[in-house]
Image (tube, rainbow, N blue to C red):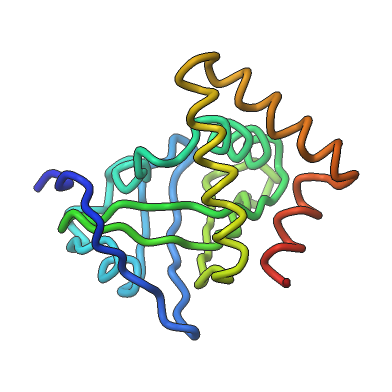
Length: 170
């Protein structure tokens, strides 16, 4: 089954929901919980072995995923707001925490992600930010979008992590 075209139908996570998934080092899904399948509108067989970007929504700036991959591939965790598309044409927002998984020798063997319902007030800020970053990516590319984000953080005097965590806790 292929993922349907995007629509305006938004699925909203319950307050106590946790979406959990694991991927290998290439981003292919090796585990997904029931809530992930429900939100994605997909079966386990439609998700396992597929690239996690099967649920990537086109409204997501590429620069956010570039930052995400750079962080986790270097062994760091990251928090991020992500808009995903579901197989039924809808979409859903998550507040994600992604961490590397290690083997007994300390080698990264995959990634583990836990997602919760994002703070609605934080999404107001994120939607505006992502829309601006997408506009910049269309005209100036991913590097320009990344520069915009970094300049904004510098202007606010905060790191990426401080910004993302602060708006979730606002």
